[in-house]
Image (cartoon, rainbow, N blue to C red; front, side):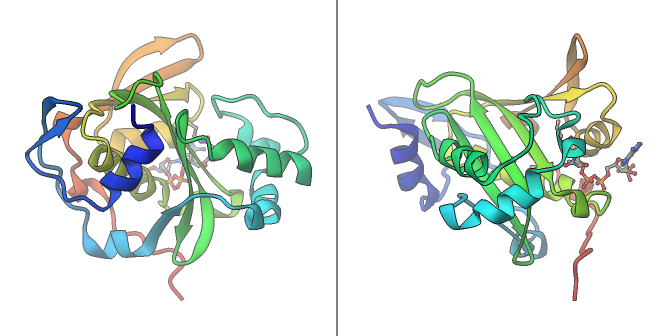
Length: 214
Ligand SMILES: CC(C)(COP(=O)(O)OP(=O)(O)OC[C@H]1O[C@@H](n2cnc3c(N)ncnc32)[C@H](O)[C@@H]1OP(=O)(O)O)[C@@H](O)C(=O)NCCC(=O)NCCS
């Protein structure tokens, strides 16, 4: 069986057709609208590398950032812990984690955690964060929309993406609402939002923020 990582390598360069054959099954695909070129051009999604450890530590070593994250604050982010988290981020069978660059600066991270290790993945949970200096600039909506679009494009069987947002995390709720995600249930302190492939991505919902323009 191809691993998710293998499949990604071959898919990332392949154009998406209306129907794609995966492991002998035809999977109907809705055509995904392409992002506006000017939005796509400003963002880059790439794996973390060992050379990012100090930068990663600097961005993540802030309890305020972890306050409403689905994962618990692991305590002070030491260089060793930063390196361990970067190593874990590379486990492609489990999740797809990308450092997010905006106009060449690393501003945060997006992560898609597969709901099972079955290939191809059919549902997943997204999580995301921006470094504290980049909050309130309107970067989250295009970052989440672009990353979702990339995952839906690369993984044709992926049909549902959910996000768990703390009920006090108004900024994150506003971002998902802006993108048209639906709140489908409440799990204790967490609101669960969902989007599906057939919802598509309405790029007209994005503002055109360019906050770090020189
Ligand atoms: C949550 C997060 C991704 C939001 O990204 P962002 O780019 O700062 O968000 P925006 O600047 O686009 O703001 C989103 C909306 O929330 C509003 N908002 C921001 N902070 C707010 C607050 N404290 N109270 C109420 N509204 C707030 C903004 O006015 C904006 O509203 P609008 O769309 O109606 O204009 C970012 O703050 C972050 O990384 N936080 C730490 C990690 C985290 O919580 N991740 C999410 C886990 S689910």
